[in-house]
Image 1 (cartoon, helix red, strand yellow):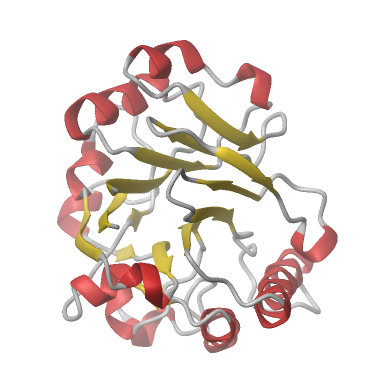
Image 2: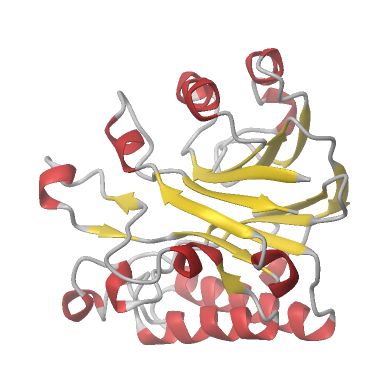
Length: 262
């Protein structure tokens, strides 16, 4: 069953419903995973998505913050959600496709501005979330699975515009990268995007603070597509739709795509 999957931090699905519809019309992925939906599940605007064939939805939501959703043309079987770090946030949801592949959609905490858990509670929550992910993968090693989402960490030197300047900036600090790597290794996850595009700078996020984000190009690769080895072997065609960051009233993230021929 071949299918194309996309992941996108939409930064309010209700505010940016027209952008989601534009993406679905232009690219027609079979599955679209959204993060930072900022909406209770019953307020997610499903009608326009369903009209385009995306009749299936599995989501977790809360008013004004966080929120994750999986939209699909293919039937979905909900398989639950985890509350890593016990935050009580809507940050994870999982669903099974008809071929048995489970998709995990994550929105990892951003971690605030100070990379010190003693001075910044949010940074500690981020590290604890990743630690709980690692423990979960160690306890129940995933298979036939895809993990996507805004993981809020750019792990490689070429995943940020300046490795040296961002070493002390939240999202690229060594301790965050260590925690993310531990989670990846615990699940034997393959970084699908980097499997397909192994060399060169890759970014999926550009700050709203930059008056000319495109020209400055101070980006980071915060959005990821991972897969277990059995699924990663069937992955191809990874791409980041940078142009979407330049749409009117955009999210600060660009969608990341991958194709799976299973």
